[in-house]
Image (cartoon, rainbow, N blue to C red):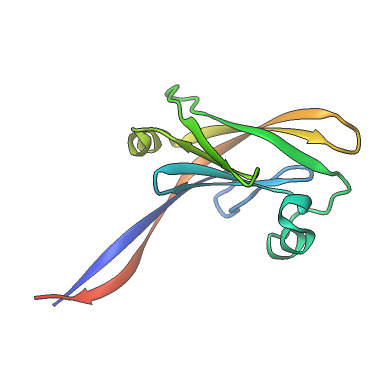
Length: 145
């Protein structure tokens, strides 16, 4: 006899097949990570040009963008998450006691990215509408009696 266990990865994406949402001079990625909904922000300066342009295949840019803040809204339900931590000024971790319920209720989120262009000094705010994506996969098969 065997038993199989499964894991469901939850992310939010603007395009189903695109893991990263691309802005002008930056990219973002949103996924559930244990008790957090984490928004990763990526620029050539924060992650290194080789990683940004190579591994992530980020769009070429002359801009020098600094992400100053990130917020999340749930337009369909009005639910809220609290910003718990910001890791290394590039990973925004949001949480709630009801995180699982909030994610289950919301197929759509709006992520607002606030940034500053270091070359021009101009501040910008941009909204990205993202849709929930669930992917379940087996994590292993274990014999049992």
